[in-house]
Image (cartoon, rainbow, N blue to C red; front, side, top):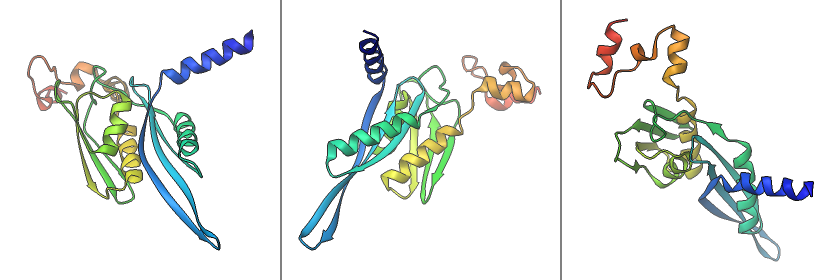
Length: 188
């Protein structure tokens, strides 16, 4: 009875995650009798509520490679603070190897404007409005890692305000008033 409950809890936990296959690479090893084919999969997993992770898996069969990548992605998840649960708090830059990514917060209704690798990360994260630009390499592995790097640098205004000894209102401009950010910081 307890084992069945534990399995049901694991299934519920697995169902809360959304996974996206970003890239599959077929590799061949030339041997005496011909070629041995293998597959490498890159998968992004997220809960669409501010947690995301990526993983890669290699196997002789595609489904096995995807399963391995998904398991690794669930182990490497990070939490990212989102503004209003739909966009980023501030712009961010990420880099991995020759791949560079620029992420910009966007107003409601913009949607996710990004390339396929970056889009997969942002959609599984739960971001609905963001503009992204990839610079440099278009390698999917580097793009995903650069995007994760940019997301790791995201800071919550409440956290920054407490570190600086300020009020959140002093740090963040009132968006409904139409005041710009330099006006809000000018009083400090």
